[in-house]
Image (cartoon, rainbow, N blue to C red; front, side, top):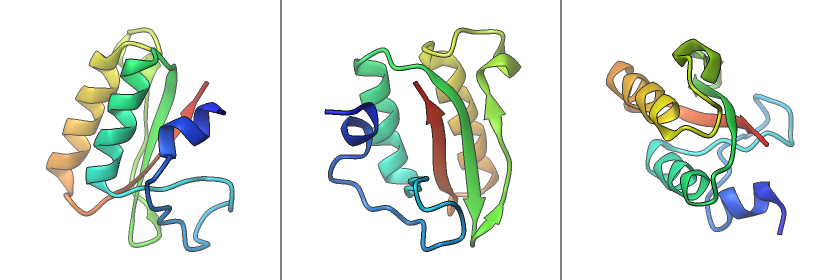
Length: 96
């Protein structure tokens, strides 16, 4: 199973064409599942990109936190900040 299939298995892709077709977007609740799965398998998360109503909202990358890409402290902190800013965001990640 590929990393993408593992991370997004059973989740709904909310990308309705507002971004490249191979980029998977999920709601806030599903993104928590994605992060849990990434943490369980020690997957590197390079960046988090939330969108709101089909428009770019922001970005966070692991370098911003001076932590390694597989350290859940950085991506959980970034996610919590985005959730506080807006609970209706759709999330994509770059990973590897």
